[in-house]
Image (cartoon, rainbow, N blue to C red; front, side):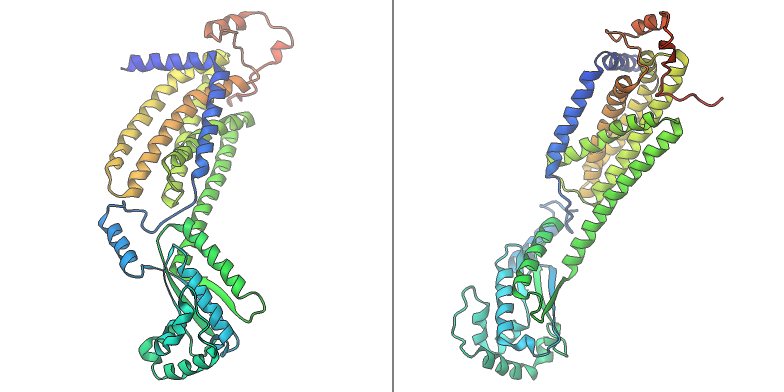
Length: 420
């Protein structure tokens, strides 16, 4: 088996040295396709994303949404310096219009405000809350005044303080929404904000603010995921600097960028292909993917530098580095994949998704480090001595020819001399 692996690595090395341009272009095409598919990946996190659709918890949630008012609140806080504004006819008509707008949205299951309580003591006010309110309330202001007087004696029993503060300067509209994820919730928030701005523009005397656990969760999760992605980019920059300092070569740092990006790009492309969202647990996979790719990259680059300093030829050094480090890279990747495969049988979706994406990441890291990295070294090294057929023996013959004075000044700028 080890002999078969050695033959496989020898064939990989031969392919890399003979067809570097083909491998490089093919890799770019593959990564471009992955990025194209990844356009469907959106930042989205759901509070029920840990369950399958057939899980009893999800079935209970859907039953509550269908038969009751739902579980997830989204609230609108209204403020005014005028304690009588919330009981003026013009404002009440606008508030009723907003409630109708919200209830017509497919993501809103329930809407209630203090106007519903007034409709309990003055049924004629219910006309304001139906789809097409009639003009049967010519004296809406008088009706509101009457209901306000009637409701004062039953405020505690009706829970009136849950919708209007005692000083009558703050009111609340309570919505219950579906758990469609932060992406759809953010779109709903934008729609509601737009309607509120139309109804209560600047100067109307009313200030509004969306709040509630659904709003806070949407904002916090989106911010968390974006910060994790930003941290990943920052870590990539730090790793680039470390490689530059470690090898004392800016060119090595540049060459390491594309192979290290390969598993990340392929993983996000796989997510787009499978329809997965970018949530907090998936972002963590990218951090692990970057660490795995960098580990293999540094392993290969160290071996290549040592072999190049020993034999003095890029092509032969690539062969020796692949045969020397390729076995370790493949075996460790295989063992990690075997360990991660256990997670695929988990009923907990984040755990199962974690193992699935990391397996894809390991495959991408192998492509980047065994194919793309040596290809980049061959194509972008100024001291590449590859003969037309790319064979190592041809490179040795080429290196045995007498060099002109200009040729003698072609040491590999890619590889820094190790300190004595």
